[in-house]
Length: 256
Image 1 (cartoon, rainbow, N blue to C red):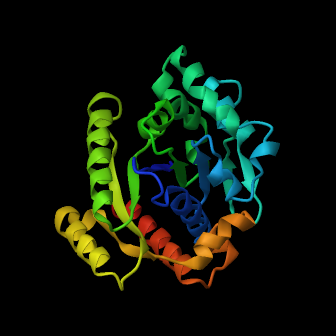
Image 2 (spheres, rainbow, N blue to C red; image 1 turned 90 degrees about the vertical axis):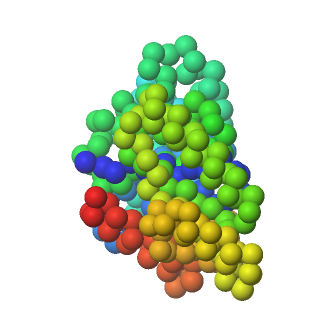
């Protein structure tokens, strides 16, 4: 059965999409079967996986409203090694359409039941706001991966997210928990980042992943080429860090 993880943080600009596509590519490189789901109407994770969101015959929107299955809608990301359930501007209207539907928080969960045995990991790129889309991701997930920069305002974002997760856990998904916090865009030369990193380790202990993703130009360039950094430049520091993260993720899942 697939492990379903949301990559989420209520603070914007923290590298959720970069984390999602590179973790997907990293897991695929080490032999895992991966489905990446883009729940953000901007469709950046879709485009960053080499899939043109404007050419999608079916998207995650169709799955949510029940007009298509995951099998019918997911496409193979050529060169990346994983399947993509993509998003485009249609998804912006899903908020309104979902309100009137039965089981509106569980639409994605119910749809994924049919493909749970086909993948080892399902990774969901969530939008920064707490919306019905994010709620659909959290309701079907086994856990949440939280990418965060080591800055003080980022700590506030984590506090907000923890509160949200507790609410979802209490009311909608008892299985939901934080898998771990991933330090991203990390610059070890900055004293402030070192201090915040140490605070994270003190407060969250083994919930903080050992892998650290450095600030890396090649990772930043990769989306303009429609590829995850892990595929665009496998030798880059950031790409190697994401491979180490993928290996650590597999180890954590096996140790459960």
